[in-house]
Length: 444
Image (cartoon, rainbow, N blue to C red; front, top):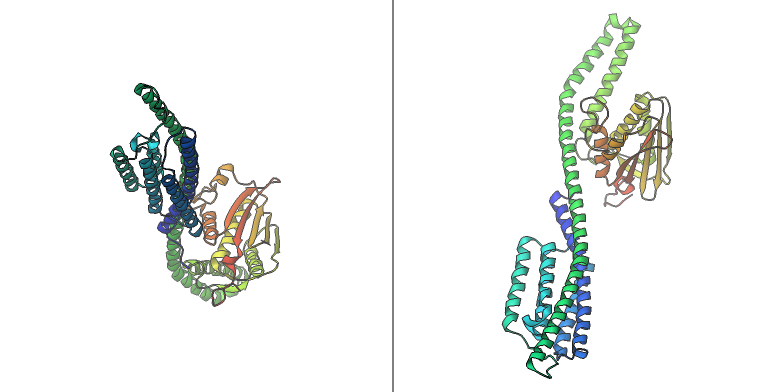
């Protein structure tokens, strides 16, 4: 199955963040409906202001119904677009406009709540969508300046001046309530929206770093494949020449020369095997050259092959794969384990420990050594290219390749320093990525 592209993943991340923000808008709208119900009842029955209660509650009912539809949309979909968020805000602007029309228009102190919709748009939407919301809110404000239903405010006893003071006092109280309400909602909800956006930005940065590292791996793979092709011919020529030398009487009659030549031939065969492995794994990780086996047998054979070619004082190997499962093994996975084992052997030539066990749906492989452990700065940047304490060209790429191959399979690689000394590199691989597939694509 093809892996998703960077553009697809980034788009999916934006839609996931929009989904979280839609839930915040739903919660905000629910609070707004509740607050408006309380405000309308207080104004009508405590302050004695004559209000068109039926029409106002019809608008509130429509707003509550819209919220239920938005909640249903939130639950049945995994991705919400920016256009949908803009429509939600525009519907809120429309509902606020209808309520203000019925309650004094631009003279209503709660008209400043338009600013809350603009603030939410500025945080949630792109530039064009923000200006659309600003234009619609401004147009509604202008419309309400001339077209609205006047409020009938009690307190008309006494002089006209006293009546005006009463209206002005109510207007100031309304402005205060509107300000406090908007300030609280901005602090609470915009803060939560900002946290969602920061989490999205952090994830996007991680994705970009991952794609850059994988591109680095691809380039190195192409270089390695090209080098392997170039090395194939001279290695084959050397093999033929050494075979001819072994038949020469002067060499065949000299046990010392024959022994050295046999050792050279073995090392040459090993070089040819390494080149063949590079060519085998230079294509898809699950491509040609894969072998059907079981997980336990694959680990046993890989560790045994590594032990034969690398001198180490003591190898402590324990595998508990119960129940064992059929898998597809390939050169890439063998190279991953060999790289980690080689690093452990370099740090601790006298001891390397390997444990493998099945935990739920994962196989956890721990490779430990008795060396000095990882420096703190290397642990912080573990798996980054050229992150090595070895002062030689190209060092630090082995673990970088290990981390990327394991991550391609959906697993993780963690390095820790052991309390008793030495270090452990722990590979966690999901069994579904290794399990042998039937012809219909299902697991065996």
